[in-house]
Image 1 (spheres, rainbow, N blue to C red):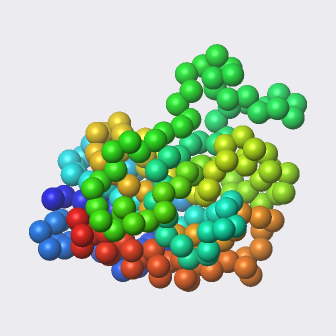
Image 2 (tube, helix red, strand yellow; image 1 turned 120 degrees about the vertical axis):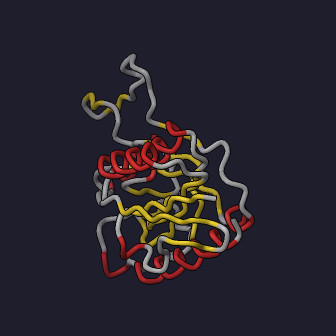
Length: 205
């Protein structure tokens, strides 16, 4: 089986390397941070090489304070939260504007994997600017009720969907989405747990 691993940055997946892993060939693609870089580089790679599976591993912020920091989650639905227009204090979706709304994507057929099935399934949003203002946090929660946010997830999911490649987005919670407070982040814990889970997923594939 030929597997593609996508991550925004190398420090997020230090233990996940390209090469043979049991019967599988694993390729690692570091896209850079953000939707544009992730969409462009993922789509190009998926055109160049045919993969059987793709995984997006990374960290995320959580809107749900009941999820402990360091928890690894499986994001089964994602959306581009900022795709739309503002009308005063009101946010208008593409549908509200009378345009095709492709801002949301659901992973209806994730890979069959025992480790993946044990992870908490959550909804996510993908943003260009991570939230750090109480007013905008409250607004996005009211609109979409997301569990977590990232800067790449939906872009990766769209690239895989367009290429017909089964995929999963797996992330570890490094922080609560709140007014920016780096002292409260547990990035090392999140990366440690993420890598342990990523290796387990690959071993059980």
